[in-house]
Amino acid sequence: MLNFSRRSIRGFALFSLMSFSLPLVVACGPQGELDASGRETAPGNTEGSTPELGAQQSALTPLPTPSGLRSVAAWETLFLGNWNAEHTSSFLPMSTSLDSWQFYNLAYGIDGNTAMYRATGKTQYLDRALLYVNNVVNNARLSSSLSKSQFKDSYLGWASARSDTLGQEVPLFESYCWRYVTRLLRVIRETPELYNNATYRAQYDKLLAFSEKNMFEKWYKRGANSYIYRVNTHMASHWAYIAMDLSRMTTDANRKATYLTVFNNINRHLPNYGNNAGLRGQMRASPVNSAAYYWNDSWGLTARPGQDVAHGNGVMAYIVEARDAGMEWTSDDIGKFVKTLNSVIWPSAGRYGNYVDGSGGGTGWFNDGFIKLGRYDANLQRRFETLNVGNNTQFYGNAAYNVRKLSEAAAGM
Image (cartoon, rainbow, N blue to C red; front, top):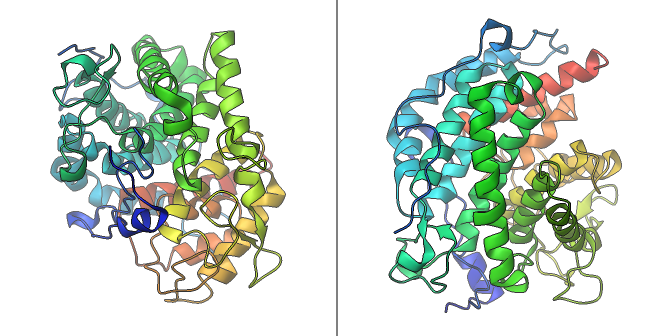
């Protein structure tokens, strides 16, 4: 098995801007700290889309845009400028691939489309996200049928074609994608017009069952200390995100208890690191701005420069959704993270820190997490209008959803 040190994990960070302004790839080591043909079909096909709902669910009621902000409609126009090109050139083939490494970048397509659905209520975006997920699930195989699998058990999964994990089942590649699968499922569960629609409900039931058994249970039973309670903040955050979502959807009381245990452990007391290690304990006042947060990505460590911004996106993606779910993270926490981005990482136009203490020369790629802080702060959202990094469907979708949330807040919703 591969066993990368903390330094080599960072060494695997890749930054390559894909064609059609696709997501800037920010990939950590394939399994980080690794110590370690059945097929299930799902509704959908490789090219089509799910039948849409009636006109009553075709769009959300527009709201006045807060003064000085680009509207949801304007962000949607930018989104549509890339939508089909990204779909045909990258996300669709990624979704039909047998290579689990492809799912890492597919995560951005699922997130961007889900965000645009949440911003507009237009089911064409939801349908596309579901298409990708259904395609991935359709290609799952029995672990025992994967020739180089290190597990060879009865769970469904995929093998990596990446050279350093060739043939292996890789928890990082799967969890990085699946946090956005479970978030998509929560959108269906929490939207009555979707949940009560037979077409969407059938997909929801199938994909939730798959997620509970062949994602969470699979890696939990294979070894939670190795594959769930990960070596650093960002990889553990993916599992906290998944566990949180599943806890809000499962109908099984025992499973829910397990999900909440994992959620709480990652936040406050990881069982395999001691000293009450967890995300909450990692947070410190920033040495640059005491009103902002600073954290190191390795459990129990506080040394600067701390978490790299690229992987810090994964922490933010989780914490933002946890705050909105009213679970562990609060508005006070969000205010500190906003200051971390606004005054420390991104102190002025064109200046981007590589680490959360603001040091190093970063890229300004905030698509997978930090951009989501714009839903709480209009001034920060306004800055995103001028950011010329990572301008693709994930960026535009999340920016549109930020404006929708700010509009709802202004309307007292």
